[in-house]
Image 1 (tube, rainbow, N blue to C red):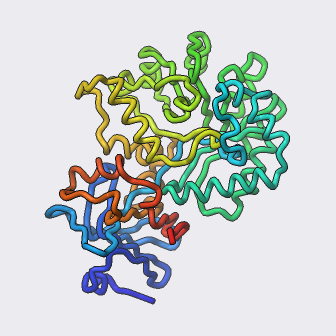
Image 2 (spheres, one colour; image 1 turned 90 degrees about the vertical axis):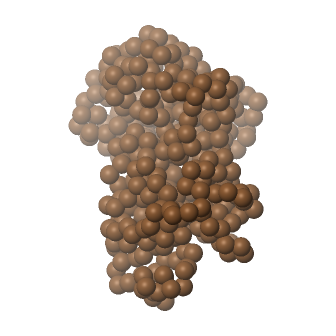
Image 3 (tube, rainbow, N blue to C red; image 1 turned 30 degrees about the horizontal axis):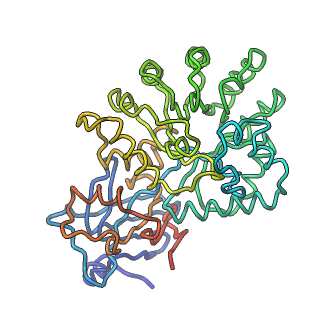
Amino acid sequence: MFYSLKGLEIFKMIYIVYELMAKKFLYSKYALIGENLDLKQNVNLEIDENGRIIHISCDNISANIEILPNHQTFLMIPGFINSHIHIGDNFAKELGFNKELGEIVAPPFGLKHKLLRQTPKDIKINGIQNAVLEMLSNGITFFIDFREEGVKGVKLLKKALTDSPINFLVLGRFMDESEIEAIFNMADGVGLSSYKQISSSNKKFVVSAKHKFKKIIACHCAEKIRSENLINEMFSDNFVDIIIHGTKFIKNDLEKINRYHKSLVLCPRCNGYFGTGFPPINEILSLKVPISLGTDNLMVNNTDLFEEIRYLYRISRVLCNYNKELQFSSKDLLKMVTINAAKNFDLEKEFGSISKGKFADLFLIDLSSPNLFSSILDSNNIYDLITQRTKSENIKKTFIKGGLVFEKS
């Protein structure tokens, strides 16, 4: 069935996707548009055959947001980016409950690594594929995976997602020096379990491969213990691009992140699960370090970035002691899983916002859902409502490159 833009205006349709020749058109009553996530209404996206947005037409909000009784009212939100995940352990949910961090994840004898070695390939693939389905239902359209098991692990992930629409980067982990170049070649970069993985003997091979293949290096750092010597060495060598956790960072460490133009990814719920502490939110806010968020190990944590946002917000409220200069706005929180995440991984030209030239990766929430009811809803408090009240059940449809990849029945 085909519709014209004029027809859309006549029928006042809440949401519809329609196709005209090779182009697609996506309409939503409300949407968060552009790098500032500005709220607009009567939004029409024109999408080319490659899934990129080639035109946006919309109106400014002239009054309070109108929720029609007994009708779905959709809000379009840019697809979320999960900045740090270990998707391969999804088959082992809660097998680490009440266990200590090192006991579960420390290679090579942590519980997770034992399970990865012992578990049949088809079960691991099934776990990966189910994790993707969960992410799509949570509005996540892109994830960055730290892939264990060396070359074999990278191949497993790619095989599992051969027919999957979701966007992802795979950061492999070399098992020994013989795998360094192969990992850089076949993966999107390297994900180090710790900077201890860089030794005097393999450092030159890592640096050489990074320059040869021009790919990123990310590294877990200061999740449980702050090793000043290791941190100083990492910054001095200056070839790690993205730092994961930084839970035990002090102000001096965070200043170096800004000075050396590094990216920082926080995983606060997983830190809480393992009891390793809270990220240094006050210092991060005061230094304006651009952070993004990840859900980390799936064996201990679900993929819901709305939960991650809320957990971080509550931590920040406690640690900032209600200092108004050290508070996140709801827009700040949303940018951590959209705009900031795309910038942290050099993806901002194609992902992270609903903008002309970027892919049409987005999801729709139904503002008429009972848990989102509010007597007053306008262009200011809508952001607070989104971050503090949205559940996965409110996400009705998820799109990648303009194509429907998830729909809640």
